[in-house]
Length: 193
Length: 193
DNA sequence: ACTGCTATATATAAGAT
DNA sequence: TATCTTATATATAGCAG
Image (cartoon, rainbow over the protein chains, first blue to last red):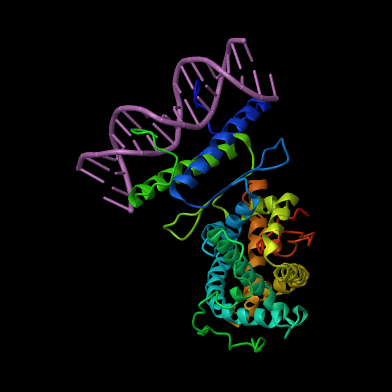
């Protein structure tokens, strides 16, 4: 982009590519930092060089980076672009959409359910082995949400005495229980604890 | 950085901050793309705006983004710091791990189950409404894994006659899945064609 | 909020050392 | 290979509509 306007395509020349790589990574990281500072937002960049094994990551603080990434992974809305991928077929698409909607609906209802489950686990009323396989996914999700919350509090308070056990009581407001979709068609009569 | 040299600090003015945010996100994503293309490396950027809920992510293809992220999460150093995060408690950790193991175990078993489910759906033996809510998550996952495979083939072959129906037979080899905590997405360890 | 504009600040491709 | 230099290409802050 300077003495010559570089075409936006893979640089075949290995040497030149490596040089460009280093320069641009530096620039990208700088821009990432700036955005984060100027606008006070969470940004995370992960860059894999073909040369050195270790990826360049920003924020360099792995805990921070992991937090941001986890946040991303929990976002359901990201699936949007995932759907574009379905030019292939339409069956999968509609299926996908419907499934997603149901999933979201279900998720809200289940959250409180999972709260109770966790409470039972912590009070030893229940062991992990007794949890139906069917519930593990959601359980995991809720637990991770809690961890994020906890960590957030640590960051905010920046104090040692963060709430622990009681943190598990008041996380989710717990929406309604209107799972009215159509789960009565077929059995779905597990999970009645 | 233009008419005035902006100080590298949080922009208090909300309006100005939002404007800067938009502009810079655009720039950052562009730079990210360019680095990726020019140097042929894996790059992933996750940007959380305070305004819109959905994070800006590059690559926009979530599957791709997830792949890069997973790669990052597999790095041992990352797990290490992730663990430090859990100084907080140990209950969650063991619980997390156990749940993960069970999840992985379950996943492999369920995969074939889902294959059959999809077959039933496609052959109209079953309608989506008849699928128990409990199964939707895994169904979605398997379907997305298939789509990824399909797209991958399209990219590789760059030909029109990509396998369709039969693609649904031989998807996941069921390889290792030693991932970080909560990437409930898809690992692309196919390649058995 | 969303253009487009423009003057400057930055980023960076090629060289040079 | 790393750093410095420099000519250009880009990015973008502040405005205007």
